[in-house]
Length: 188
Image (spheres, rainbow, N blue to C red):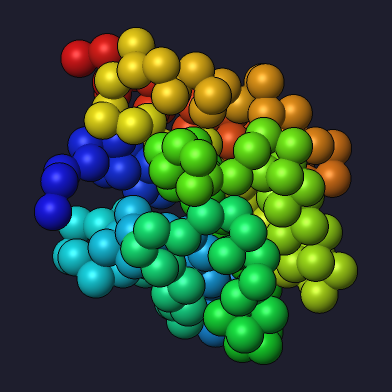
């Protein structure tokens, strides 16, 4: 398994964001789903994975949550949309992170084109929010952790046109912080 240093930054950024707030918005006893691909799958399976880092950060603040792992290796936005109901919504979480995009572009002709990607992400967010889930959109992961990789140009979040107005204020804050954190980590 390849190491993903930026995942540690994601976990630490989520933790520090919650610590900086006067009140932690996530409460003990709530369910926290993590929808994504292999990065999310391993993020729950590995002790240093970002899912576990978020769980530990919340626990350090006295917030004990139930984790719903919904990461499947190799999955793209269309597959995440297809399994959203079964893997996430049927389990009634109050919170969900969405980590998606790397496989959509990395798989080339077998990937998902930009217009369909936008539609899939929008549908995932709208369906989750309609079910009362607060959605946190994570920045798409870099391919080979190399900003110069031509495929990473497709991951430019400004170009993707995610409709952050439909996201909660917390999603906006975390999305902006994560963009800064991931880029800072990659520049070292």
